[in-house]
Length: 114
Image (tube, rainbow, N blue to C red):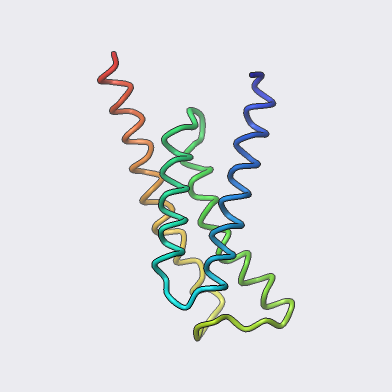
């Protein structure tokens, strides 16, 4: 697979995961399903993508603020009370943690393999 095709595939998967996280967050009252989607997606992207996988993982967390911005522009209220739009950026925390764990897992597996 060429480098351009690889980057395009990672970008498409990242956008799909971010959109999924945003959709789940705007359609769920509880936070756990959103954190699950963000955590698993960010971990897998960071663990599987050699170059800048951590960045793709963190970008998954931006799906939540983006979804809230789109809903806000459309006049749709979230299913749970939000005091400020900026609260949605807290989704970057589990994304960053999961991406860091994914990178650490990739490095560990690579070191064990030799």
